[in-house]
Image: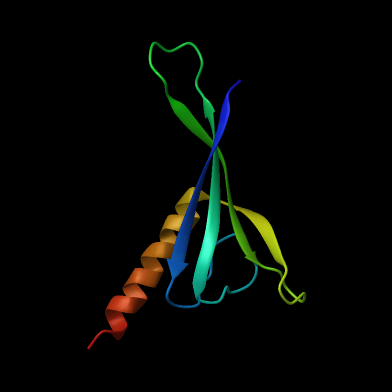
Length: 91
């Protein structure tokens, strides 16, 4: 089975809550890793998401980070909420 990882950096302009993470995260840049596996037996390359993780500041240890699993839909919802908060604060 072939696995690939996609890395991206996302930015939240406001403190954010992501379903599945018990605490509010501060505004800032976050690294997100998405692991995908190749779907075998097709006549073309196709990939299926198997895991999404976000690197966040560790709770209680200054300067440390931890990687937490999250749902891709939960991440998209948090990004949409951040964009709406930005729209609401615009004059």
